[in-house]
Image 1 (cartoon, rainbow, N blue to C red):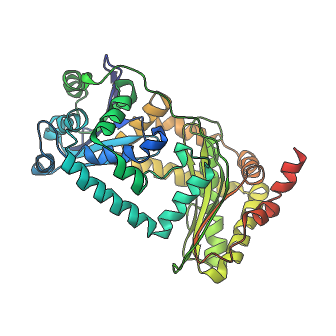
Image 2: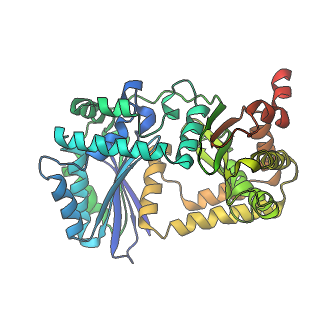
Image 3: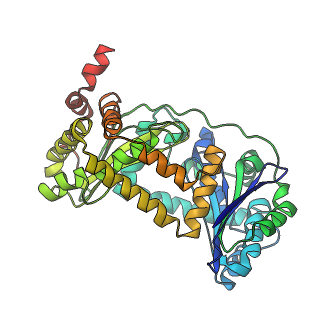
Length: 428
């Protein structure tokens, strides 16, 4: 398995990860532009553009796009995230060039037909409605919006609002595409049964049409923290308690991933054992760490009945307090093994490999070998992770998001007091 990287004259990167024993390949185009690159009146346009790219080009109708990829047994899809947008396909070996052509066509020749736009707006409005009816989605949207309060783009839901989605015109979609889909901002990545030279040659004759110009960087993120409580008559009380995390580039990023795994990364984790197994307060509980290019969020998510909320929060805070004091070497080793195996197992998937390399190039400017990632994990000590836990949980304003029958939930001021955050702030 060999990774090859070439850069076109327009700044677009072509990267392949050859897996010659396979008969299929995953390929896609990743763009360093997502929901946080939108202005306030563009909220939701990155996601709408991702949908509209499949709705017809100058060469193919929407039906022809779907039929061409499925006629050869392939799959075509896309996804919008906070910082990137991806358009990708999975095909058999002989169809790699065909898939690359379809991807280029939808990114460069989409017509954004008015009737298709009206229909797709309606689809996205239903998607927004479904998220508002799903407390487990709503609690996370409110959590991120509260973490980065003050109308920051990084805090806004990716889908947009009914008002903003309804307002978009074809010209606005084209303007957003023209402003962000530039060669230096894009990676064409493929993994599996791929020929690097053939893909580069094809890209030189097609993808070179994208502009070779820089794009405006997203506004810096500022973690704020705070509280969002929405009382409703859902059956379960959903809650997320979080703190400021670490960006991809900082030295504590990998320690934060380990800490999240130790606290709530599996059935042996501290939170699962204490909250689920010993006290039976919820069906599942987990912790997570989301890294962004200049910030991050560390959080704990759980759902329970309203009568158990206070005890649930109390146990979570107990574990957060313990984390800076008594994390053991065996816990660190187990978390390291979980992350290592997850990474290596994902490398058996061409789609995962292509996506990982593309994102690394967009975020770090280079591919990061697995050996280097392992070395970073192996270098972390118990003392380092304990110290990080103390700084995250006792020196960062918490974010509390709760949805459902949550009238009994412990409020933010009490959580801060329990963690000693008021005392720390007063001493500064």
